[in-house]
Image (cartoon, rainbow, N blue to C red):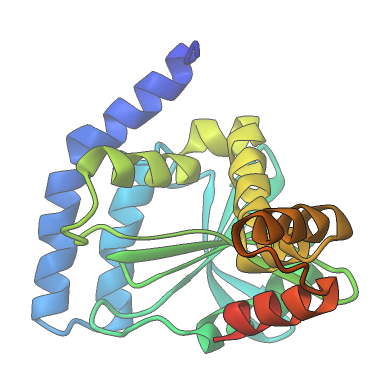
Length: 224
């Protein structure tokens, strides 16, 4: 697969600055720094790692209905994604996303980043019924089980070039919803798959089980 030069350059930029960024945010975490101090480091990353213009493209404290979102990334007059930051020592949770969803819908923005500087959770938001709040990726830059290349690959989606081209974000979003628990469960309980499972199970046991019994068993497995 051929990788475009702009993709390589963006990933190399992140790779060059990642260790310094980890040091900066690690210090904020150790010192239990407040949210404003955490945002200073995240702002450094937005400029130096991800390539945004500090004056033209990073809009801090966007006011929406007398409430504030921490950041909005705006390129050539168009909002691209919103950012909700928490202080470095805070563990992210689902409530943090709820705090920014209304801002996002009001401004017609399709992407949201929730971060405490070390953990990044990126979501696709759509004003549908029911409301779409799909997790595109979640990465902790201090995760020892992750290779640096894997961390860079995820962080690349937040870079200015990836956001401008947008297809890397859309492709990752489609991948994430395709292999989600809900999608896999839905595929497994489809008639086509259930009939194939009945055939395989019969070949192993000699007994033809009812398709509904398999469906119930699979749903129970995914609910545990």
